[in-house]
Length: 196
Image 1 (cartoon, rainbow, N blue to C red):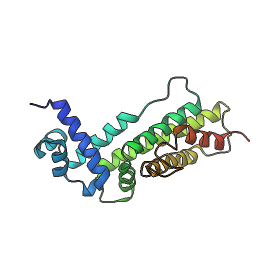
Image 2 (image 1 turned 60 degrees about the horizontal axis):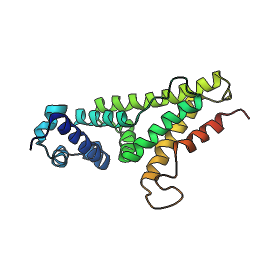
Image 3 (image 1 turned 90 degrees about the vertical axis):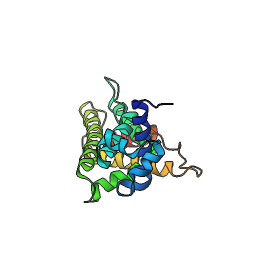
Image 4 (image 1 turned 135 degrees about the horizontal axis):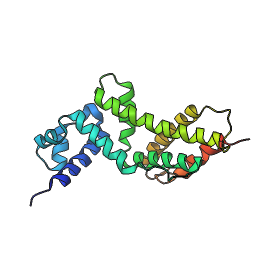
């Protein structure tokens, strides 16, 4: 039975996501990705040109699966919840990607193309959170004596860190995989930003 090109590509991306999450960029092996996807290794290079290209495509696929914009006219709190919810969903789906995100920022040997993509993604998330907090300040939801960019950084770090902690803690309470929700983190940020 023949496998269509889109499903082969999807199988490769799914295998790559697992491999990169488990082994990191440097430890990931194209041979293992091909074996997991049940395709010839050359097909990986046909679709993605390089390991770096495959990583970029796998990260883009992960982001596309979970990223959702807040609806038009959303309140600042709804905007924050949209970003925080995305971060939690992405981390739960691929907890190993948190390590890759850290590696991309700290490791000088991390491939430049992938580093640029990771930095762009990080900046977009921080930008959306910062804009939501600034919008809340303009509209009177939040106090004006806070630094939106700093609060956005703390919120993103909390979502990524707590999401990874919960994803790796399948049995223990109180931080099981479903214990921390976007509502909890959104409330935390909104309470901090609120007028006192």
